[in-house]
Image 1: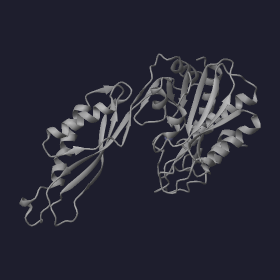
Image 2 (image 1 turned 45 degrees about the vertical axis):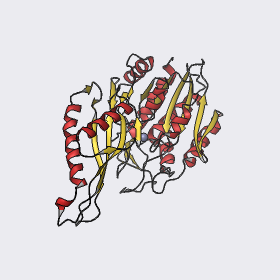
Image 3 (image 1 turned 135 degrees about the vertical axis):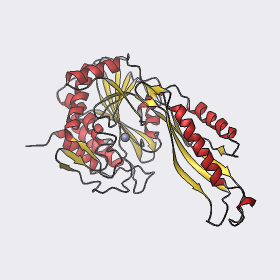
Image 4 (image 1 turned 180 degrees about the horizontal axis):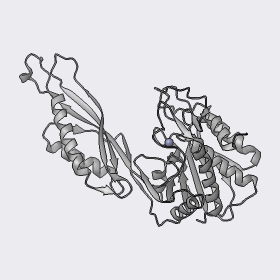
Length: 375
Ligand SMILES: [Zn+2]
């Protein structure tokens, strides 16, 4: 039995190392760009590249439509690092209906499904109601520079961003704010701790206060996303065991709900830490990205829901706690949803895999949607 094209395409993509260059063994996404180009070249579709950094380009494949309305399909080409992986990252293998390898789930599966859908229409000479731009983007896993370049002067009436949503129609995602907080103490010999001020102890009080604050956070819930959350993911302090430590730093990850302004949330934490009188202060955010909250009344959402139902899938709008390129497209006024095969639980994992049946279903969904969506 021959393998469906979308799966051989996915295997081809997984074989290419495209670890984000910000991580160990990272490389530019150019190998994936070549693969996508080679796949579409025989179909004669117009393709353009956008330079994001020298040697790191977004690729846009254009399928003509019956109108000047434009639908954007977007999938990132980069992957997480392979540190800690316990399977060969670049040797895609199918076992029991699952394909293994780095990026198999996040998000080469979505990219392959989108490519297969666009190619199918082109091969059959179908002009969908909207012009379709398929963008394979760089740098989603680190600083989102691919989509930020893409959205400059972009005109599009709707967008679908591929990420592992387990074939759910995702209209809402949390935003994220990350920043550092410091406490300073006074160094002293550990045999006379009363002569010093222990920065680690002060930071401990701050972390406990933050945990209490979290309980208040839990009270405000978004219907699809639940509450905002915080996580203290890194702590550094002290020099050696016989010193009273004079400094301590933590890094906080705060997940934001729709309607929360990242700068305002950051400023509020600044006031909160000050009120604790621990001599704590905070840096400017390392990362700030607001939430996605696409109205379920958008024609895009209704059409996606209809296509899912037509294929016997769940068409109910859903939310996810992780970020994606979709929020950046929504911010410039393009109604956006997230949809793709695979589960976020396998993304970035030591053993990354995707359910092959979901990859095929995702391709079917994209095809159905492209043929039926009138922006
Ligand atoms: Zn992803």
